Picture 1: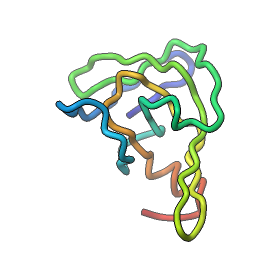
Picture 2: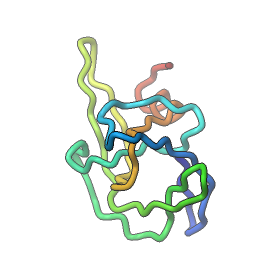
Picture 3: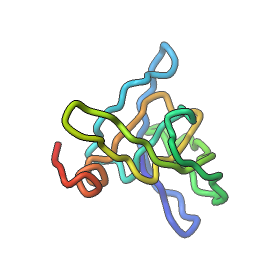
Picture 4: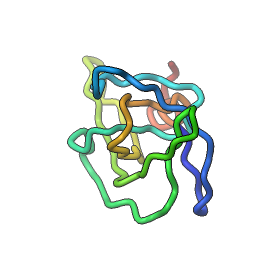
Length: 108
């Protein structure tokens, strides 16, 4: 997914799943931000007040409703996803590989 700043729209791709929302997280090397449709995954959240959208590969726009953080517990340590975009129409939870690596001092 791509998220534009300064009220600009950026191109993006979003996977579509014919069976509804997929609750797994998927690493995406092209994603500029983390994206989820599941508001309850966000541990800290605030209402998004901008006009930017996430765009699917077909060009369809999806509104961003909230921004928040997610903590994923693992047997070794907690992993953090900061500034996750809550997009109710998204059908996959996407992890930006760049931001994940940066925020967790890790690589995928």
